Length: 176
Image (tube, rainbow, N blue to C red; front, side):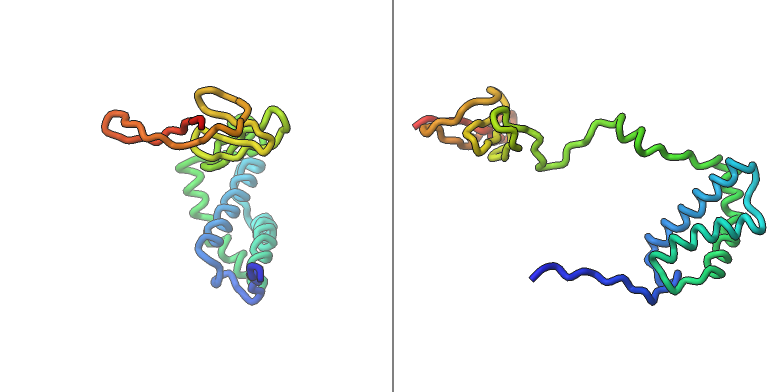
């Protein structure tokens, strides 16, 4: 039928989590500690550390329902001195500005993804060969020539050309 959906295991504790999940939680702990340090100029103590552990506990609870608050709070208190040395040596973690950075970056092209749009109908063009794309309406695009109308006597093929020691396949248009 279809793909089976993976069920969430509700009976997991923090220990049962995958290493990648634990690393994500540790990163979250350090990030929250850096935020607190920026705001107050010192590491959290007492009630403040409990408050931060509570925020982290909410994230852990989504993944491991049987995890206890005491376990997470103890883990946070255990890591706090290491975070202090890490901040002293490397400085504070810089806040990431995802939206601003994403707007500045040009979108990278994934392999096999065509961005060519037909000038006649506006549909995405399908790639037949590298450097040759077609649309359903009869318009094609070739790397050298650009857009053109297909006719019934055209045949599209790959031609082998020797460039140095390599043999490359280039798209060509032949006529009957």
